[in-house]
Image (cartoon, rainbow, N blue to C red; front, top):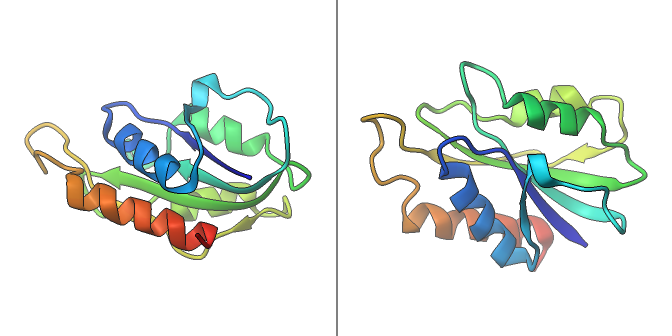
Length: 138
């Protein structure tokens, strides 16, 4: 079973989360609305962007509460005004939990103020979906 959880302040990561979820047959859930999982999760797709150099605090807290009894593997995706990905921070948070973090993330530009207007665009959404299918093996 796959699941998609994300944190999005401006809506960019939400768009990516919806594309990822559609690609793997899951529902995209904002991290603030996530309830305990009914069944073990094979791959949890985590959408997190960088805000002032770090991932969203609610997403960090959610990740800190995960254990390998509920989640086997994490795959990270997100958008940012710059090039920084949430992958390194997610990996650091999950060190020692027994949860495998996929070795690469999907990252694209996201609109912020005047930068990167129109992003993520349809091409970005298609690439996010392709990333999700590759990770999920579908």
